[in-house]
Length: 160
Image (cartoon, rainbow, N blue to C red):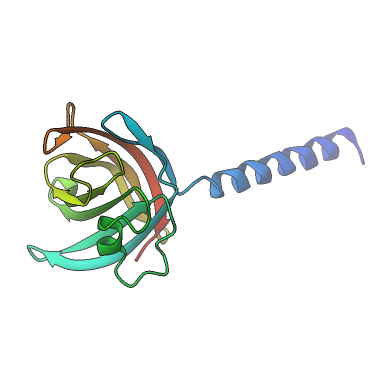
């Protein structure tokens, strides 16, 4: 094998390794803090939800524990069955993807399981190649009934 062939073989190996690492990226990355205490969300599922104002809705459940076997993952997440969790409803409007409702479950929240709107926004949401991906972030100085929360999460999940 000549030098050029070896170089191309090594280059192909590196490229395939990088592609495998990118494909294996964690489905949820980032932070979910409540009252200054962090929870590590490692799982995400997506399902279709009831339309909102005639538009389709994607329900995301991001959680510490796997919720994929649940028939009602959003409700069970709200009740704390999957550890800390967020149940987020997204819909697509003229100005892009919007969060239209969220249930917050975190052991540091006195009001864990409460619903809130206007607290979090969706950025860079894409629905392509059979996946939904995006970035969820709270507004500056966000709180849920006076309790500070800070969310900065990226996700990717199979499209419902």
